[in-house]
Length: 88
Image 1 (tube, rainbow, N blue to C red):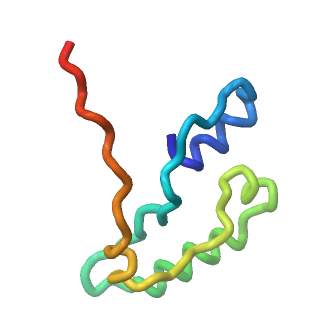
Image 2: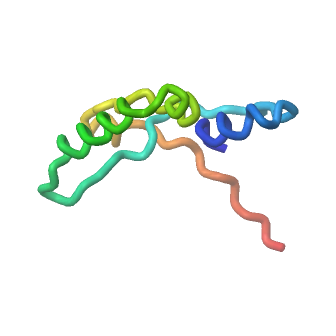
């Protein structure tokens, strides 16, 4: 379960407990078409996050965007995938 989902369900289900964690990684990148206005897209997302009411920010966990170079994002290690499915 990702951190956002855990935050959403954890408060309502106090009997649930964390049994393991992966290292934190950035979320999926926002993308635009080739030649698109990436800076404008980022600015619009930042403005939308800034306009959230405090209770909506708390519920979503959104605090802002982290702008990192594409090369830095692509250099991050991927978390391990799920184990292979067991045939029925």
